[in-house]
Each structure stands twice: as C-alpha cells, then as structure tokens.
Length: 162
Image (tube, rainbow, N blue to C red; front, side, top):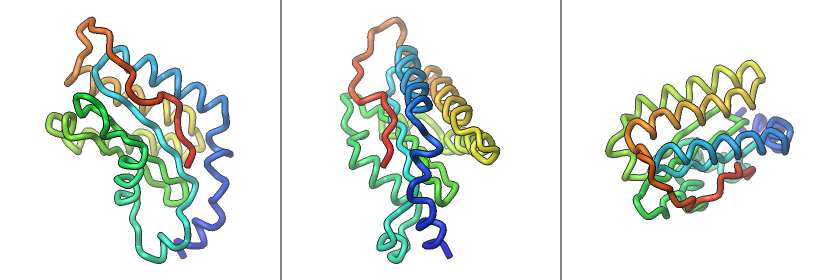
C-alpha cells in the first residue's frame, strides 16, 4: 500500500511548499544562522521512487542519503543539520552531523519533528516549517552560540525540493 501513497504524492512537494513558502523558510534559516554556529538545510521530498520502496527504504535511511547527497556533513566544524520531510510517509527526520550529535540528544530532535508534524497534519506547512526552524535555532543557540562571532554561511539556506 505504501507504493500507492508514494505514486499519488509525487507532486505534493511543490503544492505544499510553493515559492513563497520556500522564501519564508530561507529567510528564517538565514536569520537563525546568525544566532549559532550551525548550518541548517531543509529538504522536502514528495515521494520516493517505486524501486526504493520495493527495496524497503525507510525514511530515516533516505534522510541519511539526502544528508550525504546535499553535503550537509561538509562543514568546517561538523555542525550541519538536515531537516528532511517525506510527504508521502507523513514523516520528518532530523539528521545532525557529529559535531552537533555529540551534544544534542535525539529526544530534542524528536520533539522538533513532533512540533512540525502537528502543524503539517493540520495542513499548515509554512507554520510547521517555521516552528521547526525556530525550535532548531533555540537548540543550536543553546549548545553552539555565535557569541557575537560572524559565522560563515557554508551551506545554502534555500530549502531543497527533491
């Protein structure tokens, strides 16, 4: 049954995340990154290819693939964070690079995902995305504050539609 959901969800990323929503998320990420030393990447995928579903690819595994593909791991201090949304599975995953994962408990990321999911379930994708970016900002500012230092923007702030 999962394959059918993915088949009909192929174009949902553009529908739920139109350009104005992507612009707002981009601005929120850019503002966020002035408050901490992390790099946030936001990626949305409507569905997976049927071959990946047939091979049993799970959302968390796909999030790790996207983390690598978008080179979120490639920051000077290993401070990249990927927010991965798979609309067909109604799933949100956060993958943090080792510099962050060593200091932030998985429970904190799960809370962010649950917050976003509440908004998404109600059809409020912009509000959910912004609430997620804000919650991640709070976490990163607490563990990796910028302390007045100008941080280099190493990864694009624009959300990626896969």
